[in-house]
Length: 311
Ligand SMILES: [Zn+2]
Image (cartoon, helix red, strand yellow):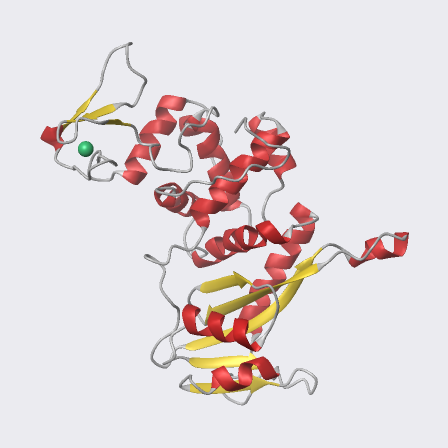
């Protein structure tokens, strides 16, 4: 992790606000109500009578700040703590627990938990921005895995925790797409394959029968026989090492940091790991800024745990 914790954006709210403005508005303030961008139509409201960072739009006569319409909107948590939490989550390869965020930010556990889910929301795939992966002669590996609590608990007489299926598709050398599915059925697999990857791609999967029919609609469908240890063919094309690598990082992260993940939130955790994977080639700060930029237009409405309202 390469975060300079002495950076004012992590402890000074004015600096944090300026930083967020620079990420979201690289060309100057934009009115979230009407889309006005012209500098002459937007004035900063100065003086003690106004909240800091407030702007006035002459076109629609509305006021706004940089957090309007973002996951940070109407939060009582100081903006600098949001920026710090975002950087920590962006930089932590295996994910961070809410306990760690609680300690590092000096907030309550509930607040940490809620903040992390809001930040995960900003990390989720945006279908408008992130289309299907693959394409002409691109190789896409698809696989499914089961994620859930530790089976060692069963030895202590506790019930074996339920495991939930997650599908992942990875374009070799490119991005990953993940989808938590209720069951690994032909219908669910088909839907995930066709919405998350382009059919001009070369698909590589294991020999599970659920891939057989949808596989025919791709340019090529290669299968890997794990039991015969045929992990790679002679030209290195037919293997699923990339998607398995993603799953192993995801599962280690889930086990190490989160202990248990409920089915309701599995997609969010998967999104968090997918986001870091998709931004793996850039440095930690660039990855964090990509989250701040994507924080627009995403609000969570659910309340957990125990009706957390203090985020
Ligand atoms: Zn406006």
